[in-house]
Length: 258
Image (cartoon, rainbow, N blue to C red; front, top):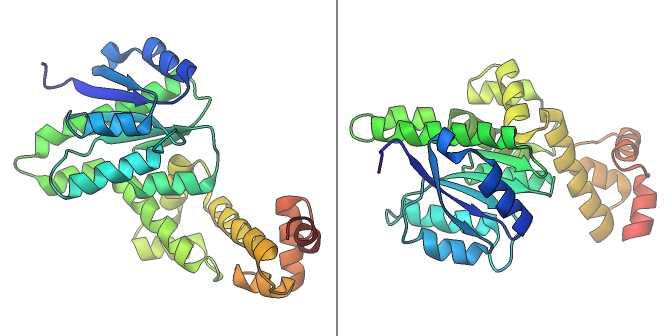
């Protein structure tokens, strides 16, 4: 087989997605061989543990084993030296920040929301193919060069998301994170858009609103204490911000969902 050809699999529990990806993407023109299609995460995991694959296109939520669980399992085996870790592209109908965050933490090439047009998928597949092609070029003499080629952007965003996770209760700004990661604010801002589909402030707000909703529903903290817990010590500002984010006041939200 031509060394420049990458081997790929598709994993999705929806038949129309599997057929659409198989039939409408010009795999040959991309230099990618589609070798198998699976409807089940566990079935795919068993196959991948004994068949070297370069690219995995996977749904997030599937029976028996989610796409995130599958990739976490493959990564563990890759780190132990028993398996080559493939380039992963996640497809999901769930536009939830936590899925994109976890996908990036696992080193995904990209995370696309369904429905995604063929052209967008082919662009991401070409990105994955380029990473695959870079691997033989550096594998024998420049492993550091390969690392830099593979994931400078994803690495930075994973680090940035971790900083947000650790410090979202503080008055934190993009410039502070950029300084900590030794990049410019403009560059990091652009990466947030490219990697997560959201701005830095959107990511921060979503993390804070999810936590605020949890506390309002499941804790006995007073509303001003909830605000302090998610980085808004000014009670009035917190209430106004929460109203803009959810369409209801913190008190109304607690009354409805607690």
